[in-house]
Length: 279
Ligand code: 6GU
Image (tube, rainbow, N blue to C red; front, side, top):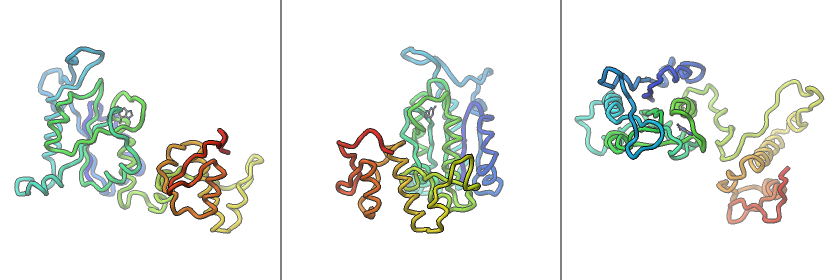
């Protein structure tokens, strides 16, 4: 996969040289290029922003530097586009991800989806955002996807790009050493992860749950699943409405019933009489 990031703070992306993602780049599993938006300005002051039409607080990013930067990045496509048909041209379009609190929510499902792409381009906005016409223009060259990490506001897209590149990059084949560790983590099955423990089995008068020392793998798997249910009900009950409960074994239905949830038409439904307490 090739990733390009355009930002007025290219140094902000330096952490992508570290750890798993840095290693993936060294190993040639991921090509990552960071571009300075100001290199695509033409004035002496390398201006990237201006005041908003219609008034209001803050500054807006000017369209032309963005068009110059994104056109240059799009042209860096490995395959020459001229000989391609319209259809394969559309298929070869890079995805342009625009981090914004006004974007579509970025989830683990989005990360999996984007990990299948050949090329991703991230456009990091600052200030009050990028002139909206850039998005319309970019739709001629990219599949444009404004993306939000969650319902809070960051000062710019750079920190969000660090998060998204890590979430996507670790799903690329060969990046995570043991692919099995991707299978049992939070959100891989729509639930939160179960709690984990390591040695010593007794620490400051706290014991590791006995079932984990039992050697009974069936029991351990069931305990872990039920812990997932409990945690998710306590911390993220919103996830349970999406959970596919149609094929749950009886013991799991009982576990959910104890948490105040019944299975109705294959979906979990919180019992109206269930108490506020869930543990
Ligand atoms: Cl992706 N970008 C910015 N600037 N702020 C955010 C965000 C993204 N997600 C949540 N807040």
